[in-house]
Image 1: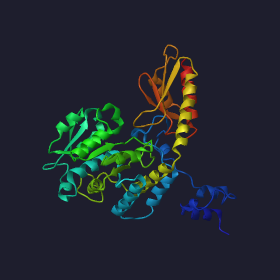
Image 2: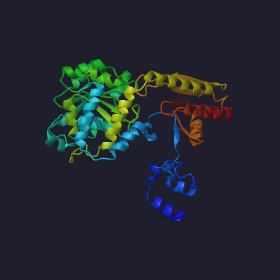
Image 3: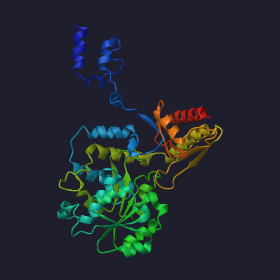
Image 4: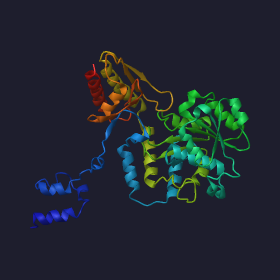
Length: 405
């Protein structure tokens, strides 16, 4: 009979054995069972990093969203085999286009990457010489017209590839700004209400002057209808983040729209080298993860999920406002991060603590809780929480506010 020492030595040389043996397989020998148990490695703890409850939203600084197990399984599957990257993007692009009723699609390196390759695609078309030329735009159309109120830092995704931004306020100014260098009209969906030119008019202006239109919808899921709405409306290209409401890989995104523009955009992406988009690589794992995330999102019971968010927000609101002097406002942003959200404020003569101090206590407490807001309010959303965490947030918030009365 083999000695216990030999058994342990043999098992220790097979690190994968835990994947095949159940936790009770060697229950008669606790020492051996410890060797083969499939223990999850706590990398964040090893690195001295604190994890937290996300009561803030899908911020890149907070690593976006948590992927469901089905997405993680798709990513793991992708890591187990080799495949031709272009062929994978072709097939997945066709599948996504079918799911979303648009001409074509590709998985990009986030919405920012989708903007960059989409911009590069319209500037260069299918001319591979021009593709290698960027960001040098000599001899190319390179002017992008956008509304002044839609100007944000993320517009650098356009200028990074050589585009020049031309800002206008009205439809009349937009038409006057069109020159023989105009190559695209760009729209920021999150700022729809701030601009004078709305969706339909913007699309119509593009069609009138034969200039492609692009809608940046990075954070505009939910609602699910937005995945179909803007391509159907006539926008030539639409971009979405993958790691926000879709709960796909944080470093992935979607570029949807007209086939000719997306095929041109693909010329700037890996596996091709010597292109402006070479560094915007999307690996096979992310491509499959993004497809799985989209399929799951389309199958969701969105009404039920919305009701859950509403009840979670109400719970936190009720808990906070049970303290004298505390008030709350439940609201839903019209565009971008369109989910039930909460603003909490209080009379600091009754509750003697500032919102900044409350955020600090929530962040530094146990467990750590991340929130947003300003000098007057605490901002909270629940859609990125694991169900049940809303109760922890409600309890901690009430404790902190109560202790300040």
